[in-house]
Image (cartoon, rainbow, N blue to C red; front, side, top):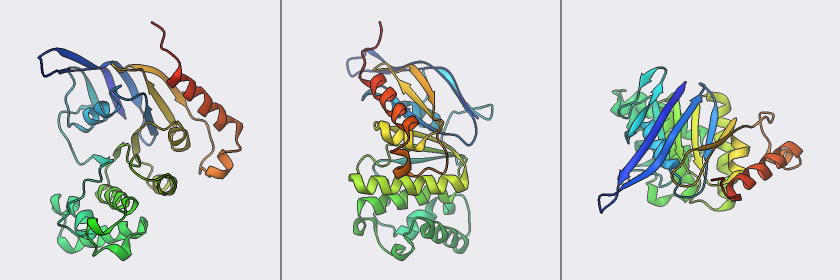
Length: 254
C-alpha cells in the first residue's frame, strides 16, 4: 500500500517567492495496482513521483509505504526515467547488474540474474554492447531490466516511453504489460498520453493544472491481459479515452 496523505509541495523561486507545485494530494494505492498519473504540463506529476521515491520531501503531509513514512530512496522503490540513466562506461550487462552489486549480491550471481532479465526484455544478445551502440528503445529496455533485476515492490516510471517513436512506444508498452502480468508489483506511471494511461492502468489519477491537485480518479474496468487491437474496438475503452480527453481539455471550475 502506498498512502499519500494531505501532501503539499512548495518550491522557492530564484527570487525567493513561494511556488506551490502540489496541493492537498490524498491517494491510497493498493499493492499490485498499475496506476497512471495524468495531467497537463507543469501540474506536478513528476514531483509527486519523486516524493514517493524519496528524492524530494513534501512541504506538508506524508507518503507512507506499508505504514512506514518515506524520507529517502530505498530498494523497495525502483525508478525508471525518460532519460534512460544508463552508465555509458558500462556494458548493458554491467548496467543491469549494477543495482544487484550495490546490494551486495556476488558478481557471478548478479550477472546471472542480470542476463536472465536481459532475456526477458529481448536484449540478451546485446549484453556486451555499450549504451551508445543501442537504439532508444533498446536503451529503455535495458533501463527497465536494471530496475526490475533487484525486484522492487514498487516501480516508479516517469514518462519512460516519452522520447521514443510511436511504433517503439507501442511495442514497449505491450512488453511492460507482459512483464507486469508476471510480477504484479505496484506501478506508479507518469504520462501525458491518455491512450497509454487507459491501455496500461487499473486506475488513472487526473491532476488539475498547476498547482496540481486531484481532479478525478477513474477506475479502468477493462479485461486483462489486454490486446491493443481488441481494445480499439471496445466501446468502454473508447469511452474512457473520451472522458479523460474531456477532463484534460475542459476549463477547470473556479
